[in-house]
Length: 318
Image (cartoon, rainbow, N blue to C red):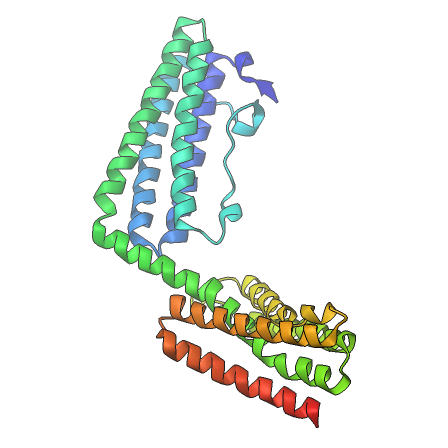
């Protein structure tokens, strides 16, 4: 890698051309990744890519005037201390807020880098060249703001906010809620049946851990294999499977951990209180994110939990 102060005027201009080309391709990648769910923002990034292409042509014309037709290949990674760009796959799945923030950082970093470089330069022609690059980036920042205002109307923003909410529900809330419900409810019967049948905290703990881990693995695989997300937009199956599996395990472990307490009666009472808290949390999530009326959510979850809980008590007491 070379230091920036070792670059000639020709190298700096070649580097700027490469940087503009790469930024334009990044904006097109953003547009392609957002097009299905956020069409208005996709148009913004398509227009920003066109702006980058305009800057690229302007820089190439200036380069031809000063140095001729051959442009040496100099990339950001060839220069020590030059700003870097995250590859598109590090932002997958594309989050709208993260992409917009990345775009803002791209324009700011470019302007700041050229501005600092111009301030350090003692050569008049290099200072002028870097100043022109600063002006181009500042102009692009203003163009980006203008494009945002033109494309992201109130209706478009409302539609994209609703789309973002839907993606959150499909990709995170639903698999997590399904796992939490299964882990919290389905493990009630084996845990409390073992507890009452043996009157041993440790035996109940072992059964609860086995049931929780087994249910987590089962639910994780079931969720990951149920839908690859290509048609429903539910996102990466591996991520959904991990979320569902982890939440299932946590749902079962919650009322299993109290049985680490040696005193069986204390452990049993605390486990029952944890169950009540788990069912209340599930009811709140269903009301908050799934548009279920609070009374209906509490009744549905409480009734199902009570049936499983009663089953465990009956079997354990027999």
